[in-house]
Image 1 (cartoon, helix red, strand yellow):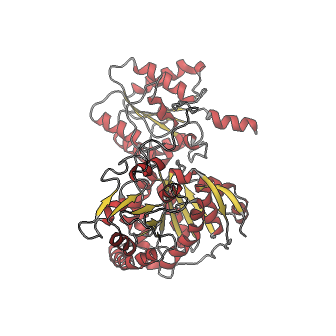
Image 2 (cartoon, helix red, strand yellow; image 1 turned 60 degrees about the horizontal axis):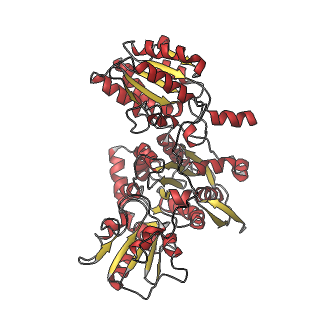
Image 3 (tube, rainbow, N blue to C red; image 1 turned 90 degrees about the horizontal axis):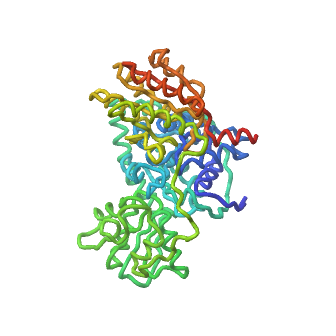
Length: 529
């Protein structure tokens, strides 16, 4: 016991879960959450214990599978990035209504500044919406330790618990001292099996029960070791520092902050502590990474006239991740950058890899679409999204996972021709199949390119759920077999690809073209092996 390890925040969460008696992790890869599941997949104890760690088709199926494992009394974890929570939301919110049996933790990694995401949404809103406890670690050590406490809290109150991470916490390293390793839970059935059937009569009863537990959750938060008040002599300002931002703040004050500080890492908000801080100080400064969740909430629990500063009032930027420089500026210590960017770091814009099959697919598609007056290409989330950038400039829309097919359908419904969808193999099985069914049911005049690189390439080469089955899936959904066509995207096959695209565009109905060639990165790894 007490071994020290250098871990990413994601790895600290994963190891904490394993040591807390985890029986299964369910996830769809998405930066910055991917490394949690990968760590569990490769950890010797997880392998020895046969902890489930296969990738799910999407975040909703992951959430539902984890809930099923919880039903059987086992400890389960589901991991995703913040936009994945939108996909899992139906099952996530309803899991607060069914409750849990074995402990269930939902780990969501938010991406302030949108390093690899479409938006900056803050998952704490989801936790508040579902009315469940939330943990937000301020360090890798805390992330590790929180896992055991979060599982215990989940089993004590029979509710899921949300663990909110952010990019800098997920992808920075620190030394973590490990603790006790627990056995996995034995299998057991819920003592209240009727509560899991959310018919209206049951759901109404469960809703009342969940609401009555809110005071219990608040009391847990008020006494939590993760929420702590630190004294300071200068009461002209009180600081509320949430999650990782507490670390940013204390970096500037090695001998201790001169202002009183309330560190918040467990929710619901510790209202008594906040009111106590407000009584002592002339004004409050809220420092949080993401949206002004706490800043907005405390205005509803404090007396009128108390000055609250933060993102909403401009002391810290309204957008982007919070940085140590932002905190220095908010405290009026210095105006210039304390941590300027290194001049040796040269910006490197993203681009499709040399030798990538998506390049040849876009090259052929662009040439064919020049033959039409107003072709439109609706793309999706994946490596191939980079087809928007020079030299291809091939796509006109990217919204969310699976939207390419349904947007192409909607455009065709409006009269657009040609209407082309580009989607990857992993994204297709994640959330493109239902859109294809809509298109088949209406025989929409669209052409779909499922660019198949045999992996989930954008997040590092994880297994893709549909590998080897795309043609059969499309046939099963109802695409006519003669309009499901496969080609190897290589320069030598350029004319074949162009002819195929041209023929299917001119077909009045749903057609699917599958350009298939292994991702150049996974191919290199396989060749080395």
